[in-house]
Length: 213
Image (cartoon, rainbow, N blue to C red; front, side):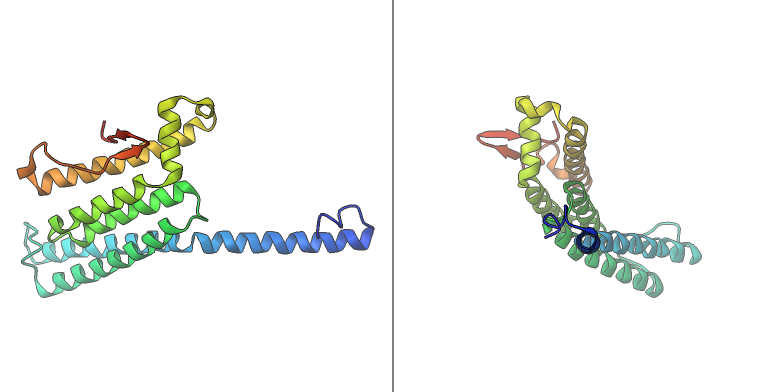
């Protein structure tokens, strides 16, 4: 409609401008709605971290220098439960944000990073329970078509390799970093595994890529 009015008279021009303004306003609202879950997940995560630090403050106030999350005072335990609730909210919002294909790829990848961090923090008093959930996060991340394309282009050095190279490598670096963090946490929690830690590979055709290497 706006295109048809492009070469019209003054009235048509004013009407066209009105339509374009409405479209721009609608687009900004759609963009805002698309990022709503992502931004909310960030807010919940920050809130959870703030509350979690109150556990430390409470322990310090009670002259307990060693933090044992399985043996907290009643007040400190209440702070921990509130923090875990915020991290649970973070995970839900981050899942919604990651699943939203209207979001920029970088935002979706960051949403997964927040989800992994919140998953670990939610199980801070028993981190071993978070490991399988973190692996599932990596599986979902590794199956993103746009990320598979990024790795494919980077490996094959196709014509597209020279376009948006920095942006593509930032995404790849983010994926590798998340794998490294999950691997690091797993080594801390499951020291009995030694070097036998298995994380999901990235599969492109018949090629398996280990992001850690």
